[in-house]
Length: 146
Image 1: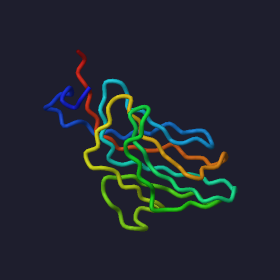
Image 2: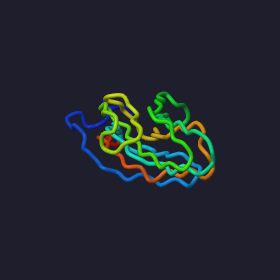
Image 3: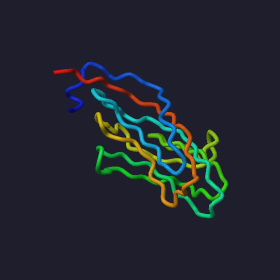
Image 4: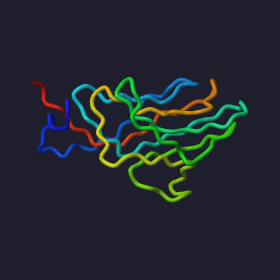
């Protein structure tokens, strides 16, 4: 399925989506639904870091269901007992804007086909660390059925 299979005259519709709230110790993972193509415009989430002493380095990855093809780290190191908030976006933000601890730049005009995933990729994630449900802003195209 390609963008050319989507309605070519359609510029897509903007959707605001609350993602799945992962269990403690698990990463965020959201899958593009069947018959859709997404462009991720922005994503906001927070992570409650446990008291386990370790630095956490949170990033975002895109994959095709098996293989990551984009990985970008945040500009923020999270320590024990902190609850940092993160924003992944196509637009660069200034430090301290919008009460964000970490910013993660993502590609402009990224296209994620059905079955592709948007995930966090965290080095140093502890078993009791807990991501909250993410919020996504996506441009969505619905693909024609053949």
